[in-house]
Length: 115
Length: 116
Image 1 (tube, each protein chain N blue to C red):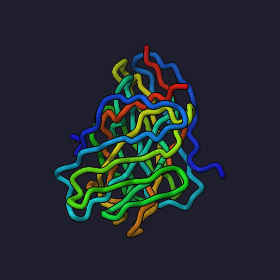
Image 2 (image 1 turned 45 degrees about the vertical axis):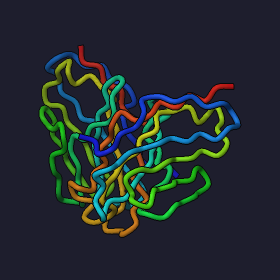
Image 3 (image 1 turned 90 degrees about the vertical axis):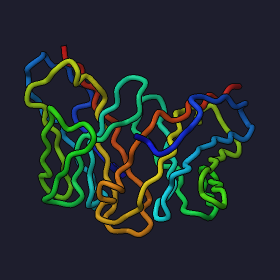
Image 4 (image 1 turned 120 degrees about the vertical axis):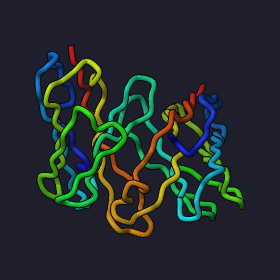
């Protein structure tokens, strides 16, 4: 019952460094999502992938790229990290095409600090 | 912008029912009401969702008004572990992963504090 697994759980980067956040789900979900959450705020959608082979921008895509590697995996890349990207990042997945979607399953988050 | 309005905070005594309100006056006919909660910086957790009928599961009950412009999440016997931020979200269910209309848009939610 792993659900959605995110790695790493914590990361500190220097300004300008790059890194990739990994996300994998084992529920055979078609859709996957990346959110960020800043202190005291709700979650904001960065990118999503409705199905394998497709990706689309969310509310706050600038400074990020994504790759839907296969049905299980959806990665988020920061090419040149900035202090404004200090945040907690959550990955989520959901079913595709169900008329009664039971919602998203979220990972436990990656806490990223850019100094 | 989130399509829902929730009070920023609420208190509830342990063992009592917690009633969390949500206004969604612009909800469309094909939009469901979803509730999630987030316990102390963990990933959000799905609680319940509904279209127009009242719903109940092992976690909570969802009461939706007849005009669907508001709803109430009820935790029947709140415990200290229910202390969390509760998010009320309206979205189109299913579809092409929901598409852009189906994406979860989070507001600031209601911070529920359950007190001994």
